[in-house]
Image (cartoon, rainbow, N blue to C red; front, side, top):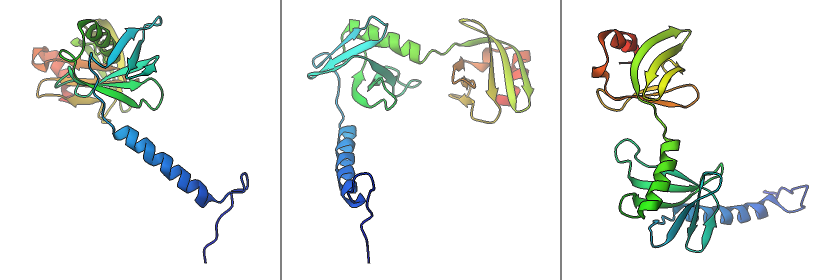
Length: 196
């Protein structure tokens, strides 16, 4: 004995709304699964006045797009994802190879955006690391100057990219890199010992 539950606002049954939502969800899923490759033949990227990037592709215009690397550490020029600049960040398309599939000018525009998104200062000297109440307080010298930041201990904040290369993410999501721990002094390595 099943009853249709009425939505008091519309007078329609929830079953009716469910069918409509399911169809809409199927259409959105199909759109998400569609992979569109972006090349110099089907797309035009331009800088905007605000320092962002716009895209025109196959009759569609996006006043602002975001640029992501699929493999930032292993293959930074391959499979560059171009996404809408809203909270959903829906993918518009993919550039297979940044050096081969777009013009030099477009490559410069997109590389500029990638540098901003993946800004990662390289730690050149560890001045001090203080461990207190489950947090580590770093005082370091980077290739962009002196910096202090805090990480949470044991929360995956320090990732080993290779045996000698570390990626450190602070509480605010900023990334720092130690390119080669073997280049650090014995004193610096002792301070970093908790993370090695």
